[in-house]
Image 1 (cartoon, rainbow over the protein chains, first blue to last red):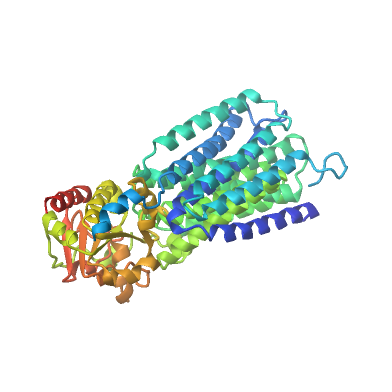
Image 2: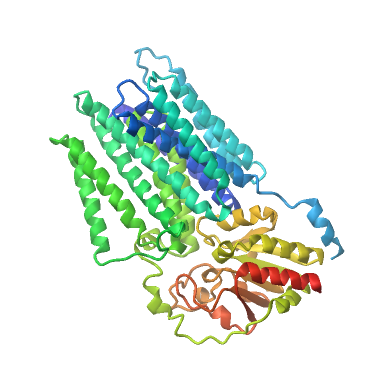
Length: 104
Length: 469
């Protein structure tokens, strides 16, 4: 194992702990948006896709490169759009809905 | 980071990646409240934009391929994300997840190919991590496709089992490990072993999701989410790219946490979910069809009278509500009841639906305020005070046998204490047993009444009844 890999492993493990800490604070009501939000985040593999398919000595032909970037792009754009769509539906109780119940 | 120029000056691209990592963490942090969650998603999206723009400055030449793929991918992603019905959200998440996993596998393959194409031998670090990301990515890709097909009901949602299933899976895993070793050891024709490992992983992804039933999908979707995260992190090791490592670790942690939560909510280990083929074997154990039920069937007007004169009604939604698209009718019923001064709450079991939090999203779409939705632990003490528990398309998560009957296949699973309410109304299509084929003694309880029929039509009938009172 190189020193470089060890540094990367350190970053990975610390990020896992940060992830567990942050995610454990997400309320269950938001678990579906959480899943699609993290889904969008792993779309970061788009960075890898660009680095592999876009450079001069690309190992793939144009078709495979196209498919690769397309998959990652689909992941990113779809993930963020669907998360946004879900989150805008979550509303607290509106005062208007509460008023008619006051005669209880 | 190690600078390529030999000096100790950080590359500005790496600074951009660091900012992206921070924005992702902040974005997830803001998901801790529905009030700030949208902001969080946008912060995360800005982080993504920064990383992608920074990457595009890195000696890119294939602009046409990149541009076309980005635009087409974005178009498909955005249009499908905007059109998808909320009931179909688990399938959508499975597709995006599979896309990410497939991309990660291809990135790893590409990096390894680059090394071989240059006529050089990969370092142990590169060969080890590239096989790892290819394997996890391919399993996630193939598994997500099967999960999608099951959720979309293109194929059966029931567990698909055959003799020697575990042996086949074990052999595939063994083949993957052997090929992995050969690639790392730089055996002759190492590249061929890499492709064999990739192919076996693809097959394993298909075969490991096949025997998992529809009701166990919340666990599978969470697990596949975690896999894709780990695959992305692993490509970060291959490319020496910290933002991939950090992001992948965050997603891996999230997916794992949700997987464990879902397993706990079913009182089953993750191994049991993956290898138990739950739902296929229990038909003999439950014997739902054989047992004679003595239930009271009532009309929608009877239910209307019960709920209209109640002080407190707790709605218990399950997957059946989603299937019948009854959430909007339920919201209308709640509106009518609240007008009459009835307190309406919603009790959500963690594994109700096909993915974590599925019911919450469906009810949010129907304009039910999230402040009326209660987790199992918060609502279970409340059932004793409720006049009516209205069970809409939920079955196993309300089954008192999980609490009392040690012979029941779901014994020990935490349930919603629906049977503690003064009256219970169960909306059901017919007397057929639930997904897992397990008998539910709640239906025989003297204070339970059954309202048979399509959930949406039944609720619409109750709404009309309440209005007429």
